Length: 71
Ligand code: SF4
Image 1: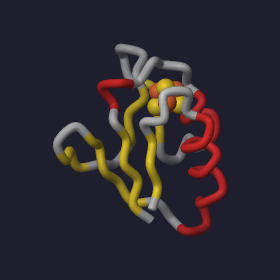
Image 2: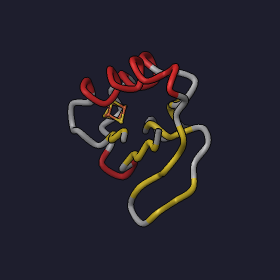
Image 3: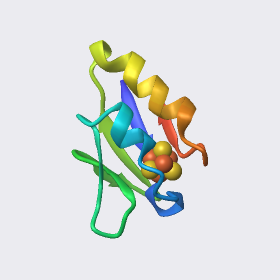
Image 4: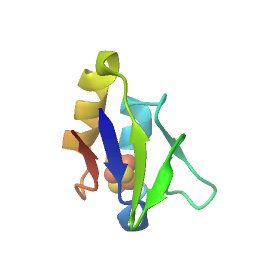
């Protein structure tokens, strides 16, 4: 699964870190960042394991500014 995260629009609610701590952490500026990613334009892009689809979906659907995408 591909994960895309538009970090520069993060409002720092930390929901994604709570739902999927294997993938997201809060940085020193209080914004979520993917733990393992390559930068693709405005998006951080990483890979998610199929076994983690449910938690990544919760992060995606719970993000209040809709900046996490999984496909
Ligand atoms: S859920 Fe969205 S707004 Fe909240 S910390 Fe994660 S990326 Fe940022």
